[in-house]
Amino acid sequence: MTDTFKNSLFNVVLALVAGFVGAAIWSFSGLADSRTQSYLLSNPQILPQMADAYQAQQAEARLAGISGQVTEPFPGAVLGNPEGSKVLVEFTDYNCPYCAMSQADVQRLVESDPEVKVVIREWSIFQGSEIASRMALAAAKQGKFAEFHEAMFRLGPVSPESVAAAAQEAGVDMAQAQIDGASEEVSQELARNNALAGQLGFTGTPSWVTANSAFEGAVGFGALRDALERAAE
Image (cartoon, rainbow, N blue to C red):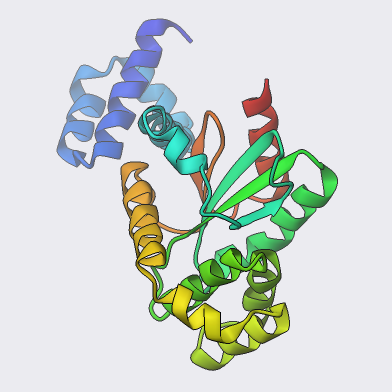
């Protein structure tokens, strides 16, 4: 594929990604050369692929300026090796079914490599989930984050009863957790996570960050492992 041909394809996809349908049609029908038109008609599946690649490229560019903030965890809100050299950040919500689906993949990742450190950013975007996020961060301050995190996903969806059950199962000091969960420190962390997600252009959970990439969705164990390996190269 020549550079000119690639550029023609990119311009069409860029217009689609940006939402300029008229511009995309204009490019497709008039300005894009006949080879581009023919290629797109024969291979329509590349449009979402190129759109995804463009969005990932944009997220990586936004990540460059805030990487340190994203990878620095709230104290204790970490899975795996707290000193691990391979850092994966997960923006998650306890009411998100795709986050629940991804739990096994994250656990497998942690168990398969002792250098993996998973920084959890509590991003409460589903209705009613903030009470679980606050308890999770309170549990983190007591060194009980991993236990609460696992129990909360298993006992969900989020309700006052399920949050209390998960906290009790994790061995959380409930009196102290009520104080910490309502603290300004925890409120600032939740606001910070929301702001970081917005800066990265994330639209939902789970969303992921490595040293050099940012992406969304329940992508599976293999994709998470490969993203960490690429970041380590």
